[in-house]
Amino acid sequence: MARFGMVIDTKKCVGCMDCVVACKTENDVPEAFNRDWIVQDVRGKNPDLHMEIRTERCNHCDNPPCVYCCPTGASHVHDLGGIVLVTHDLCIGCKACLASCPYDTRFIHPEGYADKCTFCVHRVEKGLDPACVSVCPTHCMYFGDLDDPNSQVSKLLTSRKNHSLIPEAGTKPQILYLV
Amino acid sequence: MNEYTTTRHNELVDPSLHIWGWEIPVYLFIGGLVAGMMIITGYFIFKGRYKDKACVCRVLPLLGMIILSAGMFTLFLDLEHKLYTWRLYLTFKVASPMSWGAWILIVVYPTMIASFLINVPEYFSKKFLWMDKISEKLQQHKYAVKNIGVVNMLLGGLLGIYTGVLLSALGARPLWNSSMLWLLFLVSGLSAASAFVHMVAKRVDERELLAKADNGFLILEIFVIALFIIGMVTSTKVHIDSALVLLSGIYAPAFWVFVLALGIVIPLIIQLLAVNHKIKHTPVAPIMVIVGGLVLRFVIVYAGQYTHWVDAGF
Image (cartoon, rainbow over the protein chains, first blue to last red):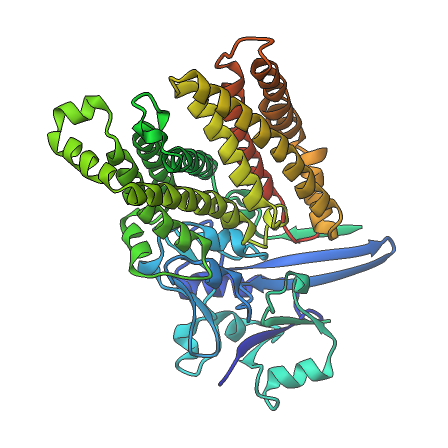
């Protein structure tokens, strides 16, 4: 079975926020909310500085605390590639999933349910890439099956150094950043 | 240097800035208080004190139901998708403490109703004769009554424990990620309940007993808090930082002054003097204990939301 994930090349990302705009347009994300965003992480001591620009979103974790803590089963793992989703009319808006996410990727939609990135499951079901991946002008984002050793994402991960976000939280994130 | 710039500095987007408001700490406090009241009621029923007309265990179930309903109302206020609340009761999610809590609350009410019916206070038995008849029938079954007492203690324990596990299961907030939290909330709940029952009890011997019990719970609470802090400061960087939020950070004044000094140490000294007959029993110490228990929930819930895994040096 496929395990969908994303590989993001931080050497190519320029932080243009096209992915953010594409997501908001594709998914009709309400004003003032984001399902994805840009982070500029600068580390080191002047003049020896290192900057990493990242596009971040729900990590669709393999060990998802948001799914475990959900009291109604609204937060669930989709059969299609292990994508973590929220069924809106099962969600009671208790916010346990918001509190359980080490990446703070979730928010409460103005209509009352917990919302977040869906990897554009409606597009993926049709064989398309998520909206953010499809619009990236520097082609720094890759979407595919992490379980398939011949997929582009798997090949990139074997050929380049990479890291995930807060691996020590133990959630096994499925978004990996090439450095 | 570590400069971190993100496009999401907005409290609507960044839930770490606000997840749960006042409703959750109030509910967690009430949950703990009612859990303690159920354990005390269960103990008195088990000991056969229910036969005594002046026993506080006759009124505690009713008070418990009223207070718990107020707590459940604050919980309801916190929900963002209120019309879908019933979805909680279409499933049971074994890994979700919130699902456990929802079902525990459902079985707590019938238990409290059963305890109330063992020996209904005169005010109700005169108005509703059927209640009196049920009491008479129940009292003929001594073991059934004892079992109601045991179930009260068990469910009270579960209710108190779940209020702590609810938070400690959320590993993303390092301050909550402690296996001591269930014990802290249970002991704090028992202490607040002893203080509360101490104030409403009519019998002097019951007051004495509860004041002594409260002193024991307060001493235990100091040890549990110490172990909770030790567990944090001997753990990873994020856990050490979390403990410092309580010890010397922005929640330190509330923690040291309201939780420890005014909520535990000073009332403990007052109550120790009272049980040794140096001073009279007054509601001052119990009120301090109750308020301290409430502030403890606020401090833990708010400080917990303030802590997170991202290396932001909070």
